[in-house]
Image (cartoon, rainbow, N blue to C red; front, side, top):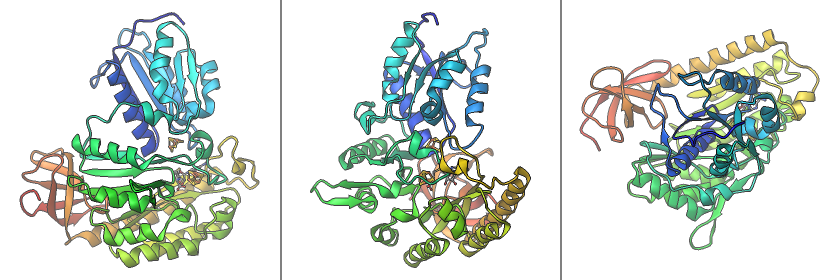
Length: 443
Ligand code: SAH
Ligand code: SF4
Ligand code: F3S
């Protein structure tokens, strides 16, 4: 590689979960602090950061095809950095296979992107996949512009080692960011326009810290601290693990008005045999009882989950148990995936791989069930009066789009502005959104 002029514009493309999106925002802020500007829509960028996800198959293949396709209008290649979980897992291979890539940087090392850029300017290719816990948060620039709804990573990594999952390998061990850092970052986000904060973590409810008096607190304590911030209107958190749900977190749903009535609690399967093989350490029944406790304090809570179909050895009866669980819960939304063998994970070595056509068929049946419940949930919301946080303009003149407390997309006409929390009557429901009628002026 030859030395190249310093890049002036950048584009960060994020492909993964919300934490990956958060990392993408932080990388963009870092590049902006170094004097670079974001490339405008439709314009070439001098530097492209591919912020990758490794959770399912084809992710890596997609990265290579993206690398191959990246070209500027004059036919030259931009400077390319591969970041995210594929970078962590396959950094060496990427460097070997894709000469167009100048930099590979892992999810715990991206604060060192400027060093890698300096090396690239000297014509050196460089990889940084160290995992210094929390180090990046100490050196990243302060948060700048925030939309009305902002992400805040509070916890990273995972020690659960579900047998199918790469996250413990790509993100490292569970760590919690310190309380005071999180309060400071939340204050910055609010100062810059955030009205809703979603606390993020691979197992966000495993977060622990110490408040300013030195008392040990859990996620509910952090939520209560955010609740005291006057200009913040809504609090959410994701993704939770059933084993880390505490009494305090459940109680918070009954007591903290700003905590939105929504819970994403992945379960993966409704079969105890499969759950055991997945190393989930909960049963279908213990999961259902947990949800009952949330519903007891917050009867209107919207429930969401993640599912994997076609885990090795999954029988038709075991899959039927998953459908049964979906019906028992009546999800407001849920994500479902075909099992994808990940290199280095125990499940990838298991017997009983499920044929692709069986997986397809199970996924379709599961998604049909989830969609049915989602529509029913939306229809049951018609007639309710609720708040909507306005996030953007709609397609039609005078139309606005935002989210209900239950995370449904709501569109309405009238006088509003981005960042307002308005009151609407929900008047019509579709599978993916609802129509609202504005009740009054902004709250
Ligand atoms: N920490 C969270 C989820 C992280 S990954 C949790 O445990 O709930 C997000 C979702 O991707 C998982 O909930 C799971 O449903 C899915 N997933 C993870 N590994 C997968 C694999 N190998 N194949 C298919 N889906 C997978
Ligand atoms: Fe993966 Fe399981 Fe950890 Fe979730 S809890 S990130 S599915 S290992
Ligand atoms: Fe993907 Fe990494 Fe998130 S593998 S799901 S980007 S933690």
